[in-house]
Image (cartoon, rainbow, N blue to C red):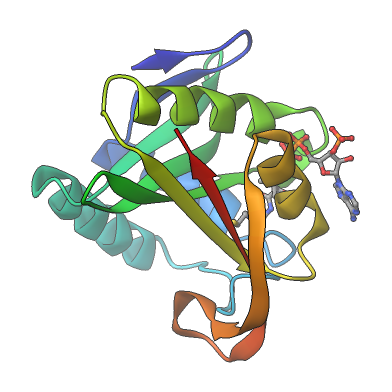
Length: 166
Ligand SMILES: CC(C)(COP(=O)(O)OP(=O)(O)OC[C@H]1O[C@@H](n2cnc3c(N)ncnc32)[C@H](O)[C@@H]1OP(=O)(O)O)[C@@H](O)C(=O)NCCC(=O)NCCS
């Protein structure tokens, strides 16, 4: 478990599915994810199950962001191998613009380079996702390249790729 000034980052558990449905079911939050919002509870439960299995296999780590008793987002390290990983994050829309994503990212970056012993973190986002790009820049990531790519298996879109070294 990680803590910041306002958030507790708890390792994701299956019972977080309803809170994640509220976030992943929001069309505005999913605008840059190249997939439609997920509105079916069974689909979210399946997704969380997959993420739990991947965590158990040591391939990734998912944390749910708790602001007091309210689950307001999710953050993850995926593709963990060779001292590197990829960072992903999302916050529920009614809590956007308050610095919560930046706060969570800073905590996970410190954990990745500290306890997890990683050397390199990557992150990719749709080039038009100004908020995500700003969060990455505020967290010390450097823009490496912009090119068309498929994020989350969706359509080919202009994307921006960032890197942060220890
Ligand atoms: C991206 C996301 C996580 C940001 O969460 P957040 O808690 O609002 O982020 P923060 O408040 O920490 O920081 C947002 C920054 O982006 C800026 N920003 C927001 N919208 C912006 C826009 N349209 N243009 C330029 N800057 C923008 C904010 O001003 C803030 O920067 P500042 O602190 O310098 O003022 C949230 O919008 C989200 O969940 N989006 C959907 C999922 C997603 O895109 N995840 C990222 C995939 S890599």
